[in-house]
Length: 477
Image 1 (cartoon, helix red, strand yellow):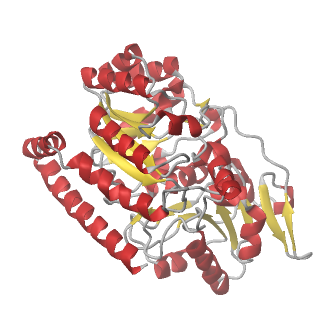
Image 2 (cartoon, helix red, strand yellow):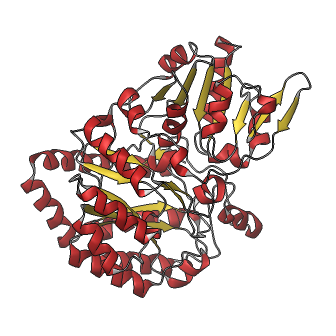
């Protein structure tokens, strides 16, 4: 066995490891998601170690000192973080030339050869799912015999692309990740504004049947078939999680759309009820009342729902598969049952105009989810949105982030500049939250729970500071 380190590398101050390291940008309030994609192979590789540098405040120098002690170093990267991650690989290679360095993540899955040629310090990249790929490499199998990778053949100075590895179909073959969390992570370092603290998140399946043009993971890694662990397998891991983490106040299932298989979601929920757990998950705004009722009665607290836009044509343009009237009905059902909603919205999708931005803000105010998140459309390589943006001349810059880590508006449309789209994010937040109803919700929550009071005060400070710095950065640019 090669001595193996799985690393989410250090980043800039204010980094947000959101959505499986999808964003890697400064966000409105500090938040960190669990490095589940690295924890999964870590659970397969005996003697391995997982280091999630940003939430544990591991510096670049400390990470290099640690990585130099390992024979195989796996780095999780993304489009926004790739340049800094490459610099880390180069520094490690200078220190330990014999260290085998591999990169994983959506960006390298789509652009393997480009990545390797841009940074010869990287020995290989693993394409698409990489759990058993990395396990084989850690076990000492030569790269020329491993499916699902692209690698440098240094004898020929050439990049070699191995055959694709089939996607895993029996998800129960994957070991539990919570023992790795318990061994290598400090769970109190992970925060999400809309989840109780401390929380733990994990996946019960991969892939998503939806065809949203902007969504990164189904188009690059997970595929468009929702491959699921059995309800019994999930239940056994949750039993273990409750024992390992008695301090956890909430568990989150980070599947792209946990509720897509409703009978299975209900089965898992009924099993979780016997454990007395509080849990939340991602959902589409089309779950029927009967299913919502079962989930709520079995411990569901909150749903994260991607509404994206308040304009039906934009939803059609990105193939969201949701009608606004159905979304209104869904929200009414959730409120009737006492299920909280964290609604996510995207500004700058194809078809966006000043009027559609106004409509989306009014839609958000009308449905009034408990909390919201507003992002800028991000055309990641490998997505249909990226291909459309290039073909239509919408893409004005390849840089998804500015120099200080703030998400930038990269798309522009006739009659709507990227600067206007960028500024609309702050207006959206202001018009949603500076209303009596959201203010009263927050004040009530703070009055009822001292810990929540302290947390909300901190988040409020971070929120105001974020937009102040964001505005300064925009003006400086």
